[in-house]
Amino acid sequence: MDDRAFTEPGPARPTAPGLPMAVLAELTHRCPLQCPYCSNPVELEAASRELSRDEWQRVIGELAALGVLQIHFSGGEPLVRRDLVDLVAHADGAGLYTNLITSAVMFTPAKVAELAEAGLAHVQVSLQGASAALAERIGGFRGGHARKIEAAGWVREAGMALTLNAVMHRQNLDELPRIIEMAVEMGAQRLEVAHVQYYGWALKNRAALMPTLAQLDEATRTVEEAQARLAGVLAIDYVIPDYYAVRPKTCMGGWGRQFFNISPSGKVLPCHAAETITGLRFDSVREAPLAEIWQRSEALNLYRGTAWMQEPCRSCIHAEEDFGGCRCQAFALAGDAAATDPACAKSPLHAGLFSLAGAEAEAGSDRFLYRNFSGGAPEG
Amino acid sequence: MSRLHLSAESVPALARHARLRFDRNRERWVLLVPERVMTPDEICVEILQACDGRATVGGLTAMLEQKYRAEPGVIAREVLALLQDLADRGYLIDREAA
Picture 1 (cartoon, rainbow over the protein chains, first blue to last red):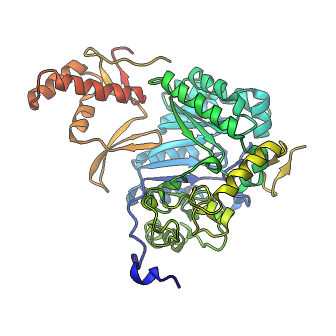
Picture 2: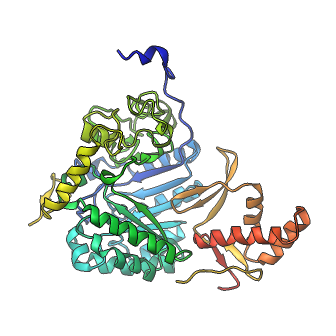
């Protein structure tokens, strides 16, 4: 046993949770696209397991009562759900700020108008690349690129805020300057330039996606130049690939602290990747009231606060800032969800991770494993 | 798209996607915007409530000058800086320019 347990016992119970700010509502895992870095779990939930409209409406009421301010309707592709407009209207009526995270390929002018009428505030459209050929190869969906561009116009005409989310990796980073110009032309207020984070599908495709360090440096320069040039026109948020970072990301603002995720079948997760940590049991909104789950869920309480930490996190001055980084990444790479995230320079695994990233970026095959319901389809 | 430059003649209003609400659970005002929750202080709330699409920046500055004491020009400068910052983030529109 660690002697420190006697001299610095820490709180006997996890710190009581505060009020959650935002929730990611994954309405479905169905999606016409097959992006190889999809943030959904590798074992996708079947349509037959999805929460019904009535169940979601009850949950939305509970979210507002619990203190949640923003709801992000996500998927899979949330436009697959025929009751999406009803759910948006219900959330807006409950006082929640509504955001739709979509590939936009299923939009029609009528659907955009109905969603605007229902109170939808913000639409976030994914971009797989700047050129149709590359974007459609990555998404595995022919014709999708032009549809996105057209749909983004409808969103702007309806008066909703538009964010473009560009997921970046070795095979599309060279198109980044053009993606930034597209965001301006499409009238977006925000652009998220988000390097792939490696969980689930992306971890399976890591060798095909990992950027080189030179690409990363070039991307950072491009983003910084554009941020200065486009001040007041386009806000650019930038997420770096943490295998090349020194400090880990403050994943989800801390486990079970401000955000959570509801899976298509109603499981309450601290983040969309948490099911990659095997052995955790997540409560479902089908079994218990949401407020009770937020307070008492064993899985949510497990890594709340800092009392669960080991060294070097436990005595680290950044413990309350980054909460030791990402638990899913610690589990995937160190085999222990309570370990320091190997993205942190203080992790004994950090140097190995850095060189692994460089090696995969140089020598990895470009061939994707596409996301689907049967464990993935290798690129033909 | 080009940058919105505010002046004393501008008529600011919150954009459709920037929603000022009283958060009953936390008992404070919040400005809800894409991907963020902003927590304006008391004076900022007063300014945002005055951005009703009718008052000019000059008009709402005069209203604040009646209510709060400050060196000449300070309130005008601070109000314009606050509103320009919000406009740069895309949270304000100018009814005059529209």
